[in-house]
Image 1 (cartoon, rainbow over the protein chains, first blue to last red):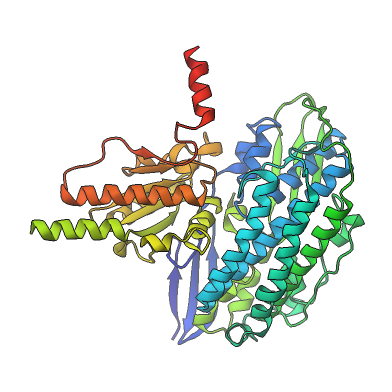
Image 2: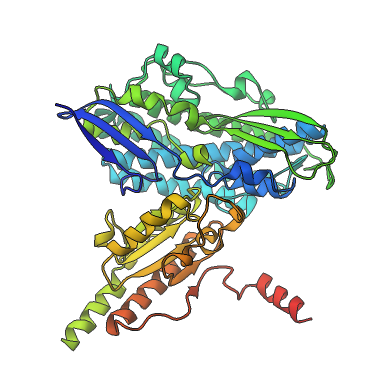
Length: 360
Length: 177
């Protein structure tokens, strides 16, 4: 006899409000239903009432974890409409910010996953290391979460002393290689809680259309930074880690390896940071009628913005956002089918869901 | 009985337990609450603990601009916290609805629905400001325990931009001039 376990929407085990109904038979989950929309703030509609300066500040608040990625994508789309090209230094600073954000997001996820495994020591360790990433971000931008770095035609703040940042990044990389990744890959607690649970096969991954680390952990080598390079990613050398297994361990490993790749990209970008202007210096923008889209690889996968504008207007006529969690969400159903009830919190967290992005 | 009351107030001030409620926040403030409990800022040394149930908590921390979906839930959770209780509004969103002002899906700000004792403005506030807010709320809680009728008439505002920073001073001078 099956029974239903409702979780949420305002539940202490959930970080954000959403509703997860698990249909169980004994300890085994047979099916699940996910309801979202509790975070709906109507941001896409609000964007239509904000001018081209305000809309950047508004879109930064779509998500508190990947705030820089949202403004980066929006600014790239708006640059497509205005015909502006950011100077090379701005492109490098964008790469640096995006990679630092990926670092802090992945370490944060590692901490949350550790907490769900019941491994509180690793949770605290991860958050302590994350503070070092936050120090670098704070040194560059002056804030810990909403960095306000991107603007149309470049960035707002310069990195005046790349060597100092480079030292911080090297210390960070050492910490990652010596603490986080060994815990990820060799700790018995982590492995026994993650191996062979929440399996998403490659076929299912293709049919669900998953993106980002979830796709790469199911053996799909897809990465927007490689497939359609934006900012200065064309000039960076990095690998795209792929794991074929598709279970939670694979997703752990993909993120762990991505942390190392991010450090690699950061070192290259800081060493090669070209001189020059950091933005085009325009404050009035010649928007043309039309629609521009932009795609960026966020820590959770591909973010796409589609911005429509009418010539002479100060406000966009439509801003559409497609977030990675929206693509990854349906895969949870196939992952939890047949899993034990105790494993479901970890499985649903393994895609690194962000419902505030998805609901907007 | 008087001694017992005083002991309870002391205990409440020294171990404020929090319940965190997300009312449509962007995760920024939520992450900073967690960051303030982890080793760098370590609010746990002040006896602060994040609780899983509102019935175990003394202080309700609300983040987010209060969506229509969240209103009933906030009122229910506020009712479930045993008195004496205090409410902290963390971030600019519950204080003013922040950049989301004019949105049709919001029912904020928070003080339209439940009484707020401490505002911690900022987008998001730094962990130090959050800890200061919790300390203020704990003091309010202790005062409220001594005299159950006493309710703080004016909510306190803590943090970097609580009206005494340089930007506010220069703004005030401009207004005067």
